[in-house]
Amino acid sequence: MPIRLVVADDHPLILDGVENLFRLEEDFQLLARCKDGIETLNAVRRHKPDVVILDIRMPGKDGLTIAREMLAEKLPTRVVLLTAELEDDQLLEAIRAGVRGIVLKEMAPQLLVQCVRKVHAGEQWIERRSTAANLEKILRREAAAREIEALITPREISIVKMVAQDLRNKEIAGKLFIAEGTVKVHLHNICEKLQVKGRLALLRYAREKGLV
Image (cartoon, rainbow, N blue to C red; front, side, top):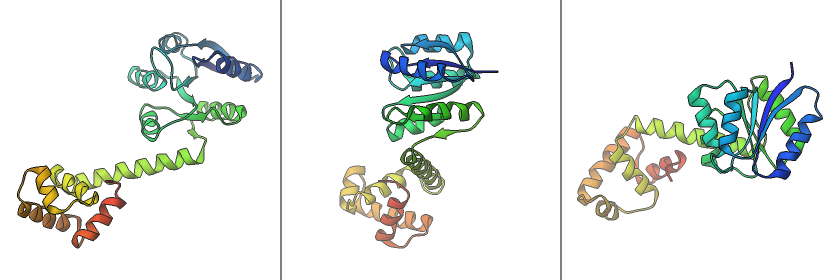
């Protein structure tokens, strides 16, 4: 059985290139080519392809919005993003939206073919090493944030972030509209809970956990 595809990009040259790329491969069947997000989502709902290749920026609905709606509707189609660039927050959002593959347009076209085959087989493909490293860094930061939230209160987290910004106790007190002595009490309690000794150790801890 061929791998059934829908491809979407608002740039005709890119769309033609992707279509021609997969028409040269015997194990793919192109079901639809789309130029905007609404058309793409309708095509996925109608054809239920194995894989949809999405540009992250399209009129109507962008690629991440389509991926989120597909996830909410529990559509079986797997998503591959083909994009010129991807910010760290978009990368994390893509993973949360169920995106299984990410390929940058600057890479060799054959990598997109490999990516789609891997994703169709149930694997994840994030092709550029720096992208994968960024994702790992973001996930570590999120895990650290959850760890801190389990140990100290939201008010205490705010104080730690201010310490990480090199604010003095008086400045922190002014921002929170509390007494400087209250800030000192908070810092003592925070250090006890996080098991760190002193302001410098707290500062290192905050930076290690990505609070700056």
